Image 1 (cartoon, rainbow, N blue to C red):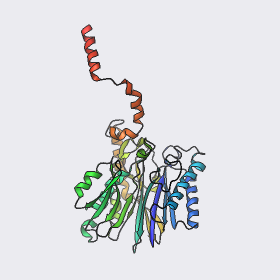
Image 2 (image 1 turned 60 degrees about the vertical axis):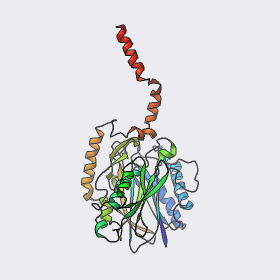
Image 3 (image 1 turned 180 degrees about the vertical axis):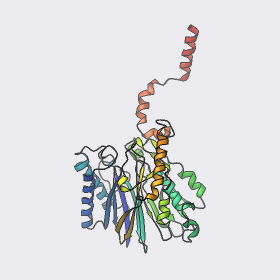
Image 4 (image 1 turned 90 degrees about the vertical axis):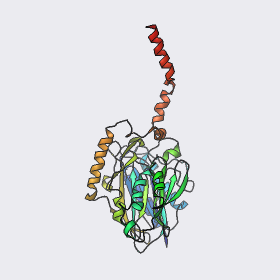
Length: 379
């Protein structure tokens, strides 16, 4: 039996500000998915949140991009917005619902999606990652570490089933095109692209020797859909582990360094990605630092056995301390780069409003110089 694992998320109202979600939002989401499970649409589900994003993890046999599954998620988000977020005046109620009506698939409508259809192996551990206050490019660094860096993943060297390497599907989010690159042969080409956070993101990873799907990430960029800043993308990621793929410990090791990601306050700053437990998945300081959770499940016949809150571990205390030190350092830059994103990346933030206000006050530098010389001559 083929099983599809679908993770769909949306920011449909924050409590308080952009920090977290309201318990009533999660209660209604669980009610809707439980009804779908009882009606046979879903095999299993798990509802959680990271920061102000409601996360719907679902398993079913409908395949990827299925209209019934995507409509379930869309209708759930809409109902939560109308029955909970708006009555409670939660901040940014329904902000990720960028379309007026469902059109068969939530891709391109605002919510983030990661899903994969698989044949369950003899044992099927999966790890679901969800982040808040950052962009899809946040996964580039850890996915590279997991599937291409032997200093992170020892199995690339010592496990014969991984020795051939992996294939990476890289998406150009500006041109809406993809390219598939092989590691380790095209490692430098891969790095040349995915090091450019503002444009290129890893969407999928396969094991090269048999095209086994290993990881899939959401790539939604809200600003490119809306044409303006409407909140950060807050990406999700599903990774399979063990049995010829990186072990659970190798997958998690990729997050032991709190690398800098774009996002943070108003989506306009760089900050460290801090791995946290579910109980700490709220963004407070400067709407951050950007957070990521890791939930482990043992999949059996589509049933989600779990979760294990994998970052709820003192082994990541040092990483969290380092993330806080990095936050202190970058925050002292205030509105200056490199804490604030470069100008090209500010195009879809609130900065254009400031520039619009000042545009008529900009004059050619030559006019100012001529006026100064004229003043000096009169003196």
